Amino acid sequence: MNRYVQGAGNDSDAIEALGGFKRFPQWMWRNTDVLDFIGWLRNWNDSVEDHHRKGRHDGGFVTGFYGLDLYSLNASMSAVIHSLQEIDPPTAKRVADHYGCFDHYDSDTQRYGLLAGQGMTKGCREQVMAVLTELHGKRESYLGRDGVRARDEFFNADQNARLVHDAEEYYRTMFRHDVSSWNLRDRHMMQTLLLLMQHLKQTQLRAKVVVWAHNSHLGNAAATSMGARGEFNIGQLVRDHFADEALSVGFSTHHGTVTAASDWNGPAERKHVRNALPESYEQLFHETGIPNFWLDCHADPEVAAMLRKTRIERAIGVIYRPDTERQSHYFRSSLPDQFDGILHYDSTRAVEPLEHSVEWVAGEVEETYPSGL
Image (cartoon, rainbow, N blue to C red):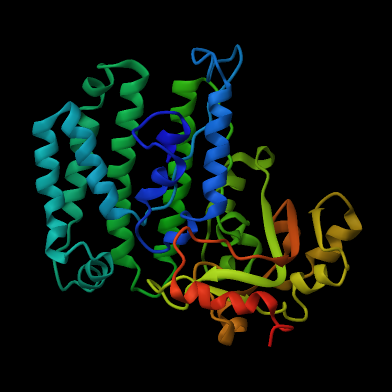
């Protein structure tokens, strides 16, 4: 997708560029909003006619689209091997041999995590570390081949190899029922962000970054019940690292529809979002009678003091279970300490997947809830 946005690669259109998203939750990226967005980004880059001026201090720049998360274990292994096959076939073969360790688990990351995490199998930790070590040992020889292009290709291979390393550890810890897997995942996001910014400064001379993630990752976890149980997130790490240079923006809604699954690896469903619970921030915003608004959490001291009173806040991710909503989707927070500002949409509409599942189409009746009953 990043190559398409920057006018590179072999994809003929935006839909084809989104073809790499094949794992759950596919609809999170393969939807009409992202399709329109990357089309807009491609047009923006194409509008900078002098390609020699892109990314330079003297005018013009190119924008990109990069990933921070670590769920793409299998795809990242393939990406490392593919990158090395073009520049160093012998190393590519050794890397493929190392990654072949995961073949014993039929590319099932959940199964790998369960067996390796419980000590029922040795796991692949040594193999993924060996790949990282070999890549870093050849860094200078790879970078000396072709300037900026070589830096981009090595960065891509190195980041995917680092992702495989961190994802292997993540899946080994995810069944512990403690905070370690969550913290490992968000620490990986933060490290990726810092390395990406460093890479962009080296290749494009300047960079601004927008991190697009769920509220539970972007808001400062220290201001929520997440922090009380020992969890941190990329929002907290960014605030600690960049202080006031970073702006944290959250989103909220009172009711509407959402595209989500009922269980992990389940089909995409269009679900009715229940009205926000009393004593929640969402209900407080609903009572203003203003359908959509931007709220600066720090502009007015009196408003900030009122919002700082701890309330419950809703978080709907790729899974939504309205039947257990209070337990599954609400946590306590102090909003001005969590976010700098909030965009509130009182009624929200589910994103439209590029592929309509039977369950998603069946949820259309909820668009007219409750008048359609």
